[in-house]
Length: 320
Image 1 (spheres, rainbow, N blue to C red):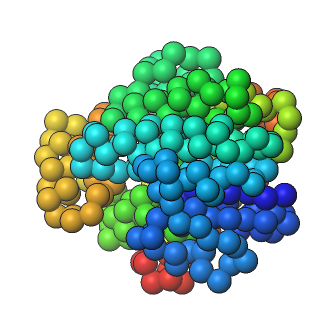
Image 2 (cartoon, rainbow, N blue to C red):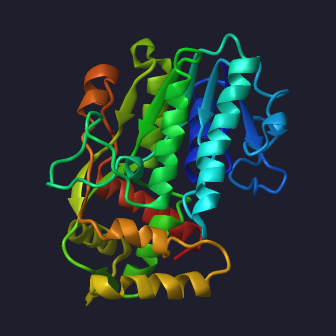
């Protein structure tokens, strides 16, 4: 079984590559020449260079794969146009290249996000049938990527996966929260609820969706459970052996923190104006019942175990 993975050098992509190799797949990673390869160095993979923003760079590389997992994308950007250039146009370029060059593909899996659907407005976890109402530029760009993929479903066997917040070793977004709690501060802007998913469960779910015939043409949420921000902070603090003081932050001044965060970081940071648009909502939760029913997807890693493993990894690698 031959698999092509885009975004393989990133947090989720590198874990997916490792799991595919464990299962006996022959794995090729598509990367830009400027990509940092540290998470996949030394792995038994093939590496091809290309850029989803340039369709011509893809045409000679996509023909001979049974499975294509498209994870390449931007989660943070300073301007909205960058999100759409990568998450929407880049997806369209890859899909078109596959339609033109790969006639025997078994499945194209597109990694989207809960952000493409938007938050729950009434506290009930969203499912695949709810009307999509993304609130951030990132979410809107991922939704446009979904629409592009679905437009080609008569020509390409597609599956769309929509996870909530994903955490685990190598992640830099949740790492910001770990660092704050380690320093004794719990930023709090009111009680919020989040669905979470440990990275190993996500990649298992993605592979399961690719290998399940009934998943062709379908969209699935994958999730562990729903946790409050207070529960999450408590579990992380316990794993770190830290005592954090609740620091109340009025929502009205959160945009100011985002502006400061963007100015202090040369690279795009999780503390940014677009992310603040999402943090203004208190329920980012989703229902993965459909995935359980149709795929047999059951998460194996709960929050206490997953947070402990993540904290241990941060310590071992001297991130904390």
